[in-house]
Length: 135
Image (cartoon, rainbow, N blue to C red; front, top):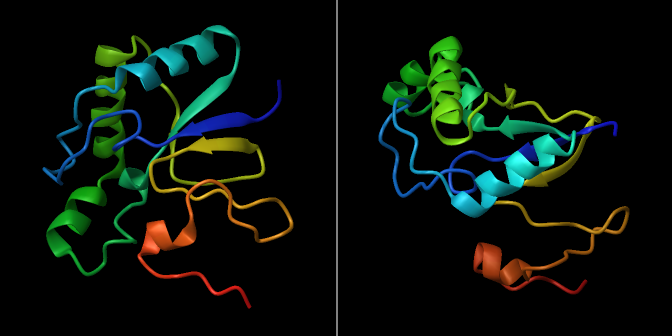
């Protein structure tokens, strides 16, 4: 099969309750870990899709976190060690969405119907706390 499956790290693959630094990754969320293992065993290309490896560009206003993020090699090493401990193998790690990604599992996503702009699943007002315009 062509393409890859993206899995968010924090709050999707690993428990997340607050920022504790790049060295801390929460305990595994077992149903997602089990899915990942099954998909890899079935031959799917599964990758961790995380802002942790963005190199500090997103958090420009948070100097402490930006400094930690800038060492992408160290951040990747922490994630790889977590993978070995909890999954049993290392998944590729990226923060770049490309045309090869055919699905993303993430706690922050809202699905949009292809080519329509129509929101699927969670109502917009539940996500942002505002009513959606019908115009």
